[in-house]
Image (cartoon, rainbow over all chains, first blue to last red):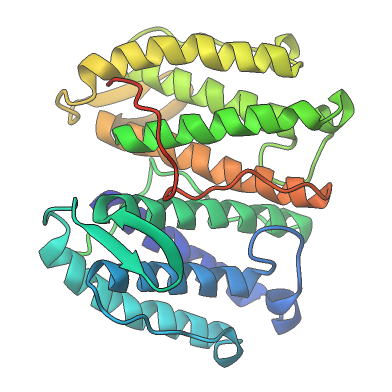
Length: 157
Length: 157
């Protein structure tokens, strides 16, 4: 589980840096499928990860509005700020029992922590796949999605 | 790890069934990004999973040519046939030591089994994300990528 978080964060950072070459217009342009745009997808991944991780901790959800994060600098800062808190939590609780049921305000279901951790991981990889199609549409080379061949930065879980 | 394989296989089967509504032309049409087409993406996912799983077992690679699998029926059959063998292997070896290094003929690197299992999982989720963009491009609703809210079929690992 830990390795997938490290992978996702490394790939996300590479995409955030990849975005440096895009104009604001390209970042915000409405696109077909997925979450509907490049910068919004990255914002959405960050937001969803954080919301579910607060859900697991029975903490109140913090709602972020994309209108307040419509620049690359702001999305990068949001990712970095929230990651710090997430690492602190996962470091001490990743191996805790994951069978207790969790409910959250934005979803009617009842899920185990283990399911939610899987969901967060798959959610990010899925949306990153969509970024790579949009990258090709604007004739840019996407960030590699390979898990192998990366040196993952251990986040000291 | 087991849960991600079950998730990927369930989602893959849903996509293979989703493809029933497409014409051969749509299935084979060249598209921008990813592996370049809907049926080819599904074939590629199956092929890559099988190759790496044989690699882990130090078995010789079996090369499949897409030219021999250019219908949905054939790709579905390939997925089902190979899955049977994969389940049998994972059932008895998923929890084996995963630290030994593996080399394969199609890649210069040297990877642990654990890395390869992560790679297979992320590889499929990534490409499935691409299918969902193409689905919207042809104005169809993609298969859900949610991990939560699914009843995963236990494949009796």
